Every structure is written in C-alpha cells, then in structure tokens.
Amino acid sequence: MDCSALAAPKNLTPITRSAGGRRAAAGNLLTRRVLRDGQAIAFVNARPRPLALYYFGSGGEDQRKVLSRTTSGNVTINGTLMHYVQDDLPFGGVDSSGIGAYHGIEGFRALSHAKGIFEQGKWNASSLLRAPFGRLADMVLETMLR
Image (cartoon, rainbow, N blue to C red):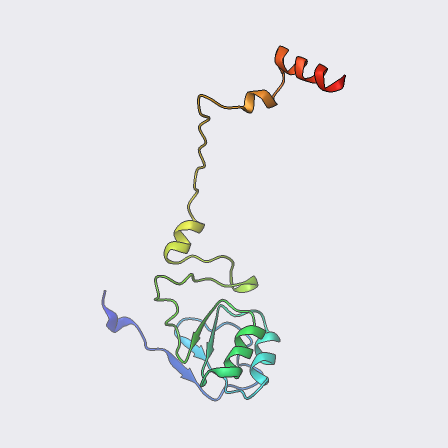
C-alpha cells in the first residue's frame, strides 16, 4: 500500500462552541476540547454517544469519574486511535455511533453463527417424561392415587 497518499490527522484548535463536536469528524479530522473538572463529563453526556472517547490526564479519581459517568464506544487513555489496532479489544459504538463489537475475536463471534447440536444417547430416561406413558406409568399412577 502506498502510504504517501494518506494524510496525517489534523488537529483543529481552537474549536468554536457552535461548530466543534456537533457532528462526527470525517476522514482524518480529530476534534479536540480542553475541559476541566466536571465539564468533560457534562460535555460528553450532552451529546450523542461517541464512537471513541480519549481521556488525557494523570489517572486517579478524575479518570475514574470520566470513565464511570460517561457512555461511549471504546476509550483510549493518554492517546488516540490506538484502541482500534489492539486485536484483543472489541471495537464498536453505542446508540447512534453503532452497535455491537466487530473486531478481533469479538467480531468473529458476533458475525458467526454457532450451530448447537445435541445427540440423545441410546440409554436415556426422557421417554418416561413423554406421552404415551405405557403400562408402567399407569401402574405407578394407580399406586400413588390409592
């Protein structure tokens, strides 16, 4: 593949409040917002659920709050886009950003049909539970009803 035809991601700064984050970025555009404290949680929750969420910070309580109080597809912490190239992570969105997880083994499972097959053994007791019951069942019932 000739990679010279691919453009590097562009960083759009500053983003105006009216334009930034209103629509999903297309192609190689990555929108960025710098938010403090609870602003990030409110910003994410006020919009359609994103396909990916990127958290930049030192971790700890702030990171835990953002991850537990927002809903998104995948999350990359202190980086971007790398969640997609991890073969062992499922990839997918929620609500309007997509459904399911279609990557690696999760994609194989989601897009495959496992055929369940059960073969009854030669000796089994299930015939005792189905009609017609026969003379033995009649004798047992008569004995129990006396």
